[in-house]
Length: 318
Ligand SMILES: Cc1cc2nc3c(=O)[nH]c(=O)nc-3n(C[C@H](O)[C@H](O)[C@H](O)COP(=O)(O)OP(=O)(O)OC[C@H]3O[C@@H](n4cnc5c(N)ncnc54)[C@H](O)[C@@H]3O)c2cc1C
View 1 (tube, rainbow, N blue to C red):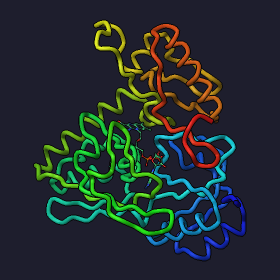
View 2: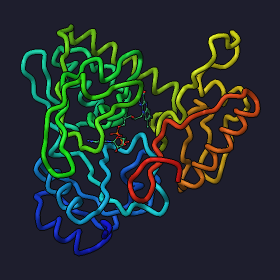
View 3: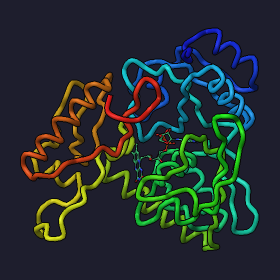
View 4: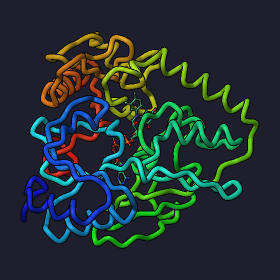
């Protein structure tokens, strides 16, 4: 097995596609945490480029990792040996047929939310506050304010490691809370069923949601959103005790706690902010400290929401 840092591998891929292949690309540039070492990153220009990148990686035994806007993950300081397939421009179309919209995986979800709302269609308008791509939103079944992607998805177009594509109906996508079960595939696009609504009302709603997020979370600072999932608590959990991860962390007195340049946000305790030059090791160390302090105080185990990426592109503890 070779790895994606192999210059011959990168050169062969570059020659085969219309998009770009960048070697030694800083992953910090591609994560909202602004953290991560380097990797070989392919920026596919077309769906065919994605298929070719997967075929090259599969044939060479090179692991690969599909990346959106990097808003729900932590890349390792050592970077990745896996080929990073960054879904963005060229894969960001939005087309409409009645109430059905087909959205490219590389389209930022807030843009998809605003564009459909402006055309008088509701259903994904609440995604205005989720700063990832459509593809990342589908894979994570992202959501907020009571809406999630699975509410509107009709089908998902995916491409498999051998380069073949297929349409997965929503019922077979395995959506659950902040998860899907699409497996080892790259999402190319999704078709959603929206409903007609007054664009003015939708705009008012999206603006109110956006302001709520801007004022209640460190929205524009380098972070990855919620670090931990909300815990599942026993039915007899006492009224008045913390319930969400943020409340547990705050009630343990950990707001403002730091590890190097990473800080538990004083604004919202379930957000860790990179105050400048922070590392993945600092994030995981701070996560462990917070987990053990909350467990010691409340007997509650906080489970990561953020995906911790290993150098081979798999997800799990480093
Ligand atoms: C400030 C802030 C607020 C947030 N608020 C919310 C919120 O309210 N609700 C919520 O659900 N999330 C929230 N998030 C988390 C994050 O924005 C979502 O999970 C988002 O959907 C991730 O999309 P992404 O494109 O950034 O995915 P990435 O972080 O790039 O990737 C996440 C996972 O999806 C996979 N993936 C991405 N694109 C593809 C693709 N095309 N094909 C196959 N796999 C792919 C990656 O391999 C990875 O496993 C927040 C994040 C931040 C920074």
